[in-house]
Length: 235
Ligand code: CTP
Ligand code: MG
Image (cartoon, rainbow, N blue to C red; front, side, top):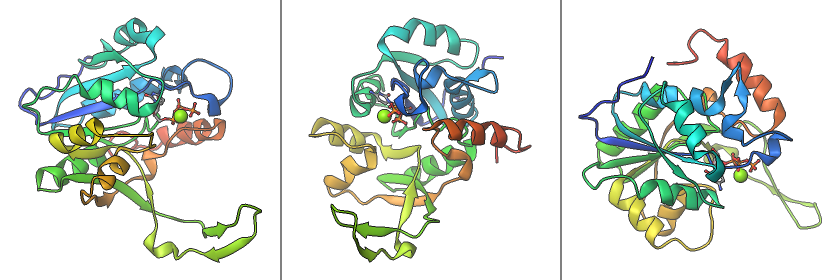
């Protein structure tokens, strides 16, 4: 059944999905790889569309797959599909160009974090709505982390209590993300990094283990197991 988005929602979600998925091993683009019989992108969009604040979803697809992605997502939710770029940052910028000025909150959410619960999407959006210019979902770091030299000698142990692992969706006031992209030089793996550089404070909210990024083959095995949890859509 096609989800209906909230015409009065104040949030646009950009979903960069144009990557090749090289670390996942041989196969098609990652967003189209199957997880429990359905493409990762379908899992991701279903959860974005289930988030009540969302008015617009823009997907950046691999250039050769734009029509296929449109056809794939039509039964899932109303989405705008554009061709992505060579780098993630370009894919985000191309998707951002589709967002009308009257949508105040923009979230950027990797298709690769296909099982991110709607509750996380909503809590990031809520924190922006409450006045934070930029918001990221985070988890505590579980491993001990060492700083090492170029020749692999330990220089020191980092205080783990001040470290966080960062997930998506990352949320922004629309104008904050637009300004960061307009002045962006180089390439960063996350959008909050761009606004940090511009001196904007970035706030953290709790992430979710379900928002893990599917990167390597074992992550697919873990994601299939997580999908079998009873609360894997909303929890
Ligand atoms: N992405 C994108 N455009 C690119 C590169 C990446 O839209 N040119 C998207 C991916 O589709 C993914 C997200 O950014 O949803 C995070 O990237 P990553 O996990 O690195 O995915 P891939 O780049 O596809 O994987 P790999 O780096 O292993 O090739
Ligand atoms: Mg990549």
